[in-house]
Length: 263
Image (cartoon, rainbow, N blue to C red; front, side):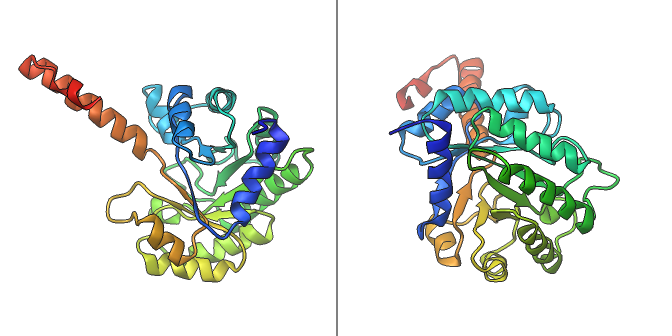
């Protein structure tokens, strides 16, 4: 399988055009990326939360340079397409967001997401007008590249204290018209909401985030609802750290090593 940036970018776009939903897990370093590739997943994505936690920080506390360096380590480790969680583009201005897209493509990423969360708790969401302008700038930058780049636009309403489905749909439709290839609304509360978003978006692919208890559904259920892509956010990182914690507690508190029986 060819692993040039061009070939990986084409394969990534084709995955979104297929009828079958695909799962795109989120590694947190080169080693976890290789393990997931070996299992046969067709594509990977970074997670800003997992990247930050691996550095001992909170989500939103790594710089653009750090995020891209993290993504590049994963891109260089595997032969399958990798997309990046590019947060809000690491800046407010549309021109800055466009530059983030160009830099992301420059390290071999096949796609990336831009969200409408500001990172400012006093003003957690951009207005729909400003958010749409930022997506339009990102889309224009992506279209100008010599290698295909799948742009995902994220509505963060359900994660940022505004669980309004109608507003979420309105935002996603605006982002689609602005040029986003894939739409994403993490935190949708139930399958009825997922189906409503899919129907409102028409032919545009919807990505769904698994990782929230009570708001994560099976691949079969999401396929039936019309979802095209599933990501796992920080959940694999948290699962790995939970396993390490259990093993370490056993050693510290009991002086035994039965965890070795499971590895």
